Length: 244
Image (cartoon, rainbow, N blue to C red):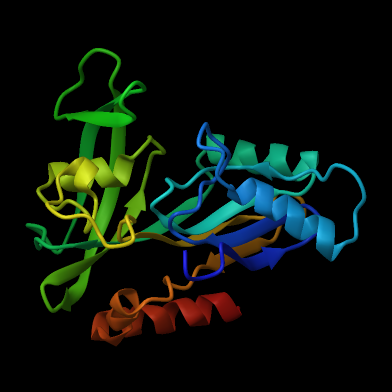
């Protein structure tokens, strides 16, 4: 991992919102590798010179090969209230995905039924309800083309495991580098070109609107997409909202 494991986007007494680097675990697993939660606790410990155990809880996760915005709770109150917002779907999230095949429509809504296989850590996708499969919905918007690739803006309407990855693959547009879901070649760093770009919600304690933007990963491939005209127009709109 060449860039910092995470960058702080927003912080107050209750919340810590960061831009996670691709390749970093959100929380610990059986690999024993460092996780975002571990590093965030260390960040809080050092910044505030806290002795002993530090509280920091993960509100939601990003898959290891995915980059972008992640919300953590610095207090039990913050964690509990943010978790409730996620459960009640009072959170708006936007992702950017790079695919090689242009989608059939400029924008559309996808509806599938997903079933996770915990043994293989993969998700099966169905067009119709079946067994224990859960309904999954997302919207996408085509932003533009760069060389052989296309950039999509994706808004998940439900929160299923691997949802964006598997639904785009089911449409015939697997995410660049995502060999687990049909892309032919892995990226050199082993990560995939899916980035959690934006999250907005009403702060659960302050009761104020909050919009958090996560800059794209610091590598030439991602940064080239900043040159797309539609992308630049969208960024200007977001800068205006962010300054309000």
